[in-house]
Amino acid sequence: MQRRDFLKATLTLPLAFPLFAKEDEKLRFLHITDSHMDLSMPHTVKAMEHLADVVNTRFSHIDFVLFGGDNFNNTVPGDKDAKIFKAFIEKMKVPCYCVRGNKESSPKGDNSIDAGEFARLFFDQKGMRVSGRDWMVEHKGYLILGLDSTIEHSGAGIYTKETIAFAKKALNKGKPTIILNHHPYLNYWHGTDPKDIHKYVLQNTKEVQEQLFRYPNLILTLSGHKHIDNVSRIGHVTAIASRAFKAAQILYQNPMRYIKIGRGGIKEKLITT
Image (cartoon, rainbow, N blue to C red; front, side, top):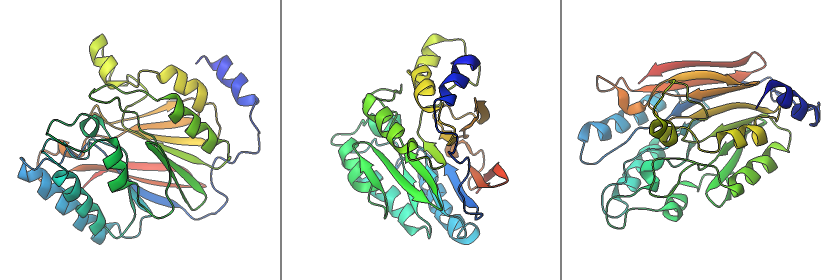
């Protein structure tokens, strides 16, 4: 979207929308993406076990943890890996919210979980309002939207018309809003291979930016998928793609992002377990 068009679209919206919640209380949370827990790779299971301990000892003060997809590789028959991942997040003393990535939407094992089973397992948190593959929760005056950007049996991503409509309905509430999804909105690594861009950048990113990023109360988006860390701006929106949790070179030093939001703005830092 060109700057002139963006400003024109923004001016059609109520100017009273707050950029941050009225409460002076800060929102604190972790963004963890691409953990790729795999039962055939024991170190990935140990990393999740360690994460639960870290959250409970170092981050019990935060509001929640957001898991950004490719949480587990979904390669074993049945739902064993999904239930083990769920058991780890249930050990954490703070709420945990998850969206799917391409690994969860492209099961390789016989009878591996699909979108419906993922929703049944993970969309059961208190206060979560679910619409199809998407959900919404509210904390301290902020809305957090979990949007499913996956295409079944594909590494590529797109927002369906239903997902866009769900997000617009939430944004129309006027509350400061955070979007969690798997596929990034930008070719921030400056790739030149069309196949690479097709796989990693949200396919209808231009439409999504025109439809959603014009809302002044959308303050932050959180993605993953490419495994490369980046913090960008799309208009007034901070767009973060966090480094893959599985990218640790040494066990128990897995990357994750600590985020704090309040009247002082958005403060974020990439840390390790």
